[in-house]
Length: 342
View 1 (cartoon, rainbow, N blue to C red):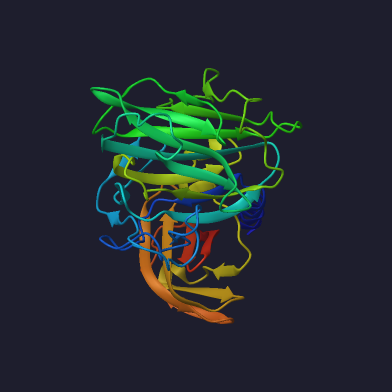
View 2: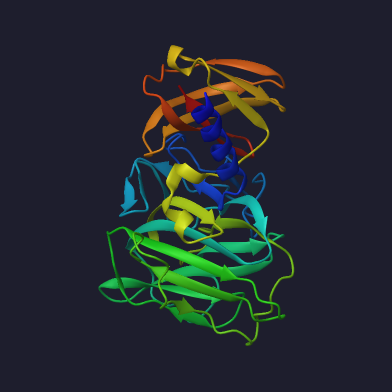
């Protein structure tokens, strides 16, 4: 009993001080359907951030496909987001960060990209914003480079910085780092491409040059991102394993160090008998309930509806004792909690 109480105390401590901000491998989403409307993702042609219900022209959001993406010591997922030109932007908010550092990462596998159309800002496929859909803190894009493609990074509307050439039809890991500094235009954005995730953070990075036109820092938190496919200059391919954290090392932790959320409390006392109890402080329809072992294995995946009360949920019996992650994903909800199964 003493060991169990100690373990539970440690788990609560890890959850409260977790550095993971956002983690989505798209595994619970419906393939062949738009990402918008699944999990916390939404789209809107009339908003630069791609956040909200789409009411403008088109409203064709990039869709989830059964295409595996992976990267060593970072993760693997059987589903990904298909992107191509002339579709609607799709975005999500996440817990805001306004000091220190924030890392945002994902895996890309592109089959084609356009030639540089003349240095305009319209060909980026990914944006990170600050407390508003039009406040672009930095953006990422891709150009054809002959036999492959290069990634460009741009802070605000400042100068672009290019990566070395990458190979088409291969998985590549992109890690972006935003560092908050005390001045008005000295925040730094760094890009790491295909890093060794078993090692510590690299010392050599591609970094923005600050102080130029268009690089003034936003004074509010970094709190939203979108994949922006509503232009003809977007690369073609898939993107997956989207994560955000406050530290480099936490990007490799997968499901073992997710953000704690107090909207739900999971009682796992009867998990071995195929039953868990979820105390919810909100009503939630058609949510995804997923349970992972600490090594990332999915042991439960079902759709549930929760009421603002105690909810008894039937699950596949968990035969092996230990620590598991319960993930609840629904309309603007992405909650994760560690449980202990005796």
